[in-house]
Image (cartoon, rainbow, N blue to C red; front, top):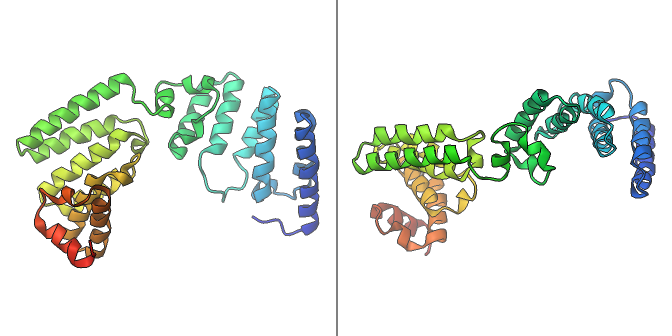
Length: 284
């Protein structure tokens, strides 16, 4: 909700400017108090206005700096209700998780850190104090972008089993093994590099089963993995699957991407129809 009273808007802006001077002068205590003045002049219901989020967040972060755990928790809880229409990237849950951590509530911190991790795909934890990374098993590994060793070993074993089944043309069996491996990835699955090749492997099996819709769905999922947009094979198979679904314009986009990434060689072992189609639509 937008503030309509321009006098209040101007007053809040003036307070922000005064507060920034205090912060620049290394006076965070007075900075927080000054921002609380801005909060007080917000009309009711305060939390409904967009300005409430920025004010409450700044105050909460300042009390974190000041190590005032009680005030931090109070403002972190207020922040949860502020500007409900704001795009949700896990920031408000992350602040509350830190507040609960600083107040010794590790179970509560785990709950909100987990939500923040899922909403931000782990990005919100990058560069934070390492003490927050060890609240529950697996969080540090997610932020450091390395699978826990036990999960990695299981994923590798299932993937090898899936590849053996694929070599034996047991496509359903291979899909089952790759899907088991995918289910082991800590959520969100697309945060992990392994998700790219697992989704791609599942999609490849569906492609060989002539189930092109299921193949395309899995290759689209694969494209959501780290750096997957630059994977020539994923783009190639997605383009081929879409071609078989008579979605030629979309097919052309991904076949061309595959060509731009890998050149003509990537088509060398494929049905010549796909490269012929590309050549009829694009001057290569």
